[in-house]
Length: 308
Ligand code: CDT
Image 1 (cartoon, rainbow, N blue to C red):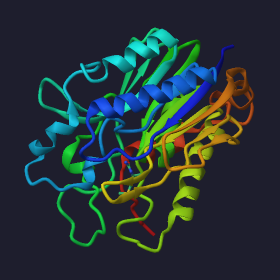
Image 2 (tube, helix red, strand yellow; image 1 turned 45 degrees about the vertical axis):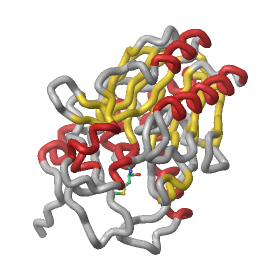
Image 3 (cartoon, rainbow, N blue to C red; image 1 turned 30 degrees about the horizontal axis):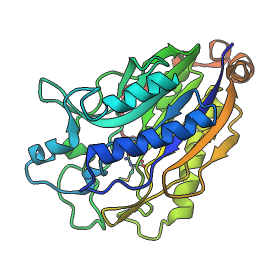
C-alpha cells in the first residue's frame, strides 16, 4: 500500500490583468515550497491560471476565449510541468479548456511524478446561470461559458494510489464521491473558487459557507473511505472575495491540514493509503451493504417530484 505526502497549493487572488507568466511563476514558487516540505503530490485550484472569469458577463461568449487554453501543456505552463518533473511531484490543476472542435469545458488534469498528463476531468456540476441576472450581487456564469463535462468520473492509478478528480461545485454532490468510491478511489482532489458570500442570499456569510465546504468534503471522505483534498483560489479577485479554507481530509473524515490565509499558502499531510481499507471493508463495504435495487431514482430523475 502506498504512502504519499500530499499537498494543497492554495492560491491567493489572480486579477484579470495578471498574465499567465505571473500566475505560473507563483505556482512554481508553491511547488518549490512543496518540495521543501517533502510533498509528492500537489493540488492547485480550479481555473488556476486566470481570474474566475465567469463572474463577468460577456455578451458574446467568444469574448471569453482569452481565458481558455487550446492545449495543455502550452508555452505558458511548460515551465510548471518541467519543474514538477525535476522535483518528481505529481500535480493537478484546473483551467478553462477550448477544444479543437470549439467546445469549452471547466477542466482539471492530473500528472504522474514524471510530469506526464495521466488524467483529465471536465466539471460535471456547473453551478450558476447562463444569462445576465440583475438580482445578483455578482454573476456566476459558468453555464454560459462551459458545457457540462463529458468524461464522467474516472479514476487513475498514479504513484500507487487510486486517484479521482472533481471541481468545486462537484464537491457538494454525494453522487460525485460515490461514482469515484465505486471505483475504489483513495484520493479525491478538488480545486475550487467559491465566493465568500451568496450572490442571492446576502446573509449567508463566510462562516456558514466554510461550514458547508468542510461538511461536503469531510462527508465525501468518510462515506467513501478515501482521502479528499479541497484547494481554494481565495482572496479579493477583481474586487470580489473568494473564500479560502483549503483542507486535507483523511478517510475517517478528519481534517489533517487547513489553510489559514486567503493567499498563496501550502498545506501538507503524510497520507498512508492503507488507512482507506478499514472503512472500505467494514461500514462502507459497498459490495455487502449497498442496495442499488432501491436507488433507481438517483439516475432516473433530476428534480424532486412530490407525489403525496
Ligand atoms: N466555482 C464553483 O463551482 N463555485 C460554486 C459557487 C456556487 S454559487 C453559484 C461552489 O459550489 O462553490
